[in-house]
Length: 341
Ligand code: ACO
Image (cartoon, protein in one colour):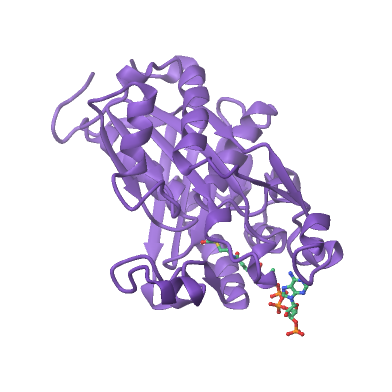
């Protein structure tokens, strides 16, 4: 290992994995719960169904399954991990961090571990932090997870938001890479002035849980959908093209475009602004809905499993979310030979 201060190392993804709960909630099921229709949901969002966690399933349960798969594919044992980051807006509890719970359940009781909250951009933020930790030589094997049980903060009486969300987890194991391979660039940003377009009012120090906050449904996600929509298209196209430029690439050089899965119209509008043809765009929103910080690693794992990503391909991940936040990263997908042990 090159651990010289001042010498930065390349890093990349060694293995990916994902996990979704068994229960499927279809648009037809939602028609029985609120005043909506399959036609409205599909035409406005592209969503056909989503997965919903069992009552006893928490974020760490899905995270654990996704992590085990990613570790196995990476050929890395849990004991080798020296950092675990879990991106989530639905942690098991306020504290301790879900990352500490995941590390313990994997059998690692020494790695650094913390949660990271950047809304649906959480996985891109966590990947950036993890790769920078490897770049500096601070850590060698980093587990980055996005895991969400959004069903527990969804207001099932609000038809404007409850049709959008689902539960899932995705994980990636990062390790050092040969220069010029792995993660090539990052863009991260935020604009807190848009905090009130997507948020959960109660349960923190501003509005601790009381009978009144529960009765007034303030422990559920609130969203101004139209405002999020406009911001999302702009933020995705801008951060994706900036990440490509920082990697020395044009959007046309991207082989696989993996955007946050919030709405098929947002995805196709951002791809069209970038000039990326739809056959290079990974979309699984019809199956899972919006799974917040899990959506990008879930789509990445599926794309890899389906053979849509080959070593040498340029892969662009881009997200936006509560904060408001945005982020993008470009990587050159690594072969096993490009790992630095
Ligand atoms: N079924 C039927 N009708 C509905 C539903 C529903 N589920 N929801 C809203 N409507 C109605 C509205 O009441 C409105 O009726 P009105 O015209 O009589 O007032 C009409 O449909 C149109 O509503 P809009 O909100 O204008 O619909 P729009 O085309 O904007 O689509 C949507 C709404 C899908 C929410 C869209 O704005 C969107 O996808 N926004 C982005 C949301 C997003 O990405 N959120 C996640 C961010 S990521 C994170 O951090 C969690």
